[in-house]
Image: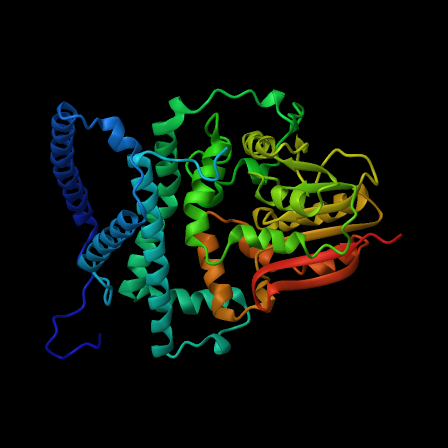
Length: 92
Length: 347
């Protein structure tokens, strides 16, 4: 993307001192993932009561249709992440 | 043994994430390289000297946000793919059948006196967590998870078909004793076995764990390969023992001095009239300058310390210096893809 005169100046946003902030952000993200993990485990327990065991989930092999859907979602998620980090022109 | 080791949900999702991340890194790389032409950097005008080429391309891409992201994502993949594979294996390990490799049709000589060369023992090839030997079943983790469920999906084309294509280039079909150098998990050994069904196949590799995986593969086929822990530069076999000595994708993991020693060792153990087939990564002299820069960059960052020194070697000249006559020195597809050398020990 070509720069325009009104664009803010291009800078290296993060300085060394900010790397600690990035680490803190990663830990906060880990906490969010943990909350989701906790929720998934509760869902698995509830599903087990209804005949769907965690072993069935572990051993489940996606069929071609689901595999394709998972791939699309995975690539879109990675695309959004990279776009948030500055990549341009990715299909998300 | 099934064609592909079936992973559980977490392992499958981990490996599929690694594949998608690596494919995206490759896409970002292509985008970043396409930005070079806008900066007036074109392959044909880059310096012949690789170190000069590095300075120009590296510094131009240092300003590219896309390339920085490509580097971050690639770095993540290089660090994490092996960890993901170990985690995927841990999830299924307890359910794998007990094995007794010693009772299989493939025999392994563990060669207890083997001293691994320093270049092999101290290099972190591919930056894979655990190296070649870091787990009791590391060969299976490499062969079944890293190779089949990661590498085969991120490299263009069919990496296994290339092995068959190289073996099919052999000048003769009636070899009786074949030695493969750098057996790894046995993918090329399978191709050799299929193409030369009447030959006794031997193989060496410095990693016992990788030979164990080759044995699993060979046992499942009922093959009677004889494998040994050794390197190509010091095989320990008698003079004039084999009528074909071959290696696939091994040279780029060896420094030039060891490659030179391997040519001389191959000459020694081949019968007069015997053939050598060595296949490895493209020769820098035969590909465009930007592609050579790309391989060099990937080698520098992706745990391939000997890729560039080895890809810059003229293997045909080295073979001649060791006494061989050259039969063929070319790429599977012109100016790209796998390079192969066929040479003969004079009668």
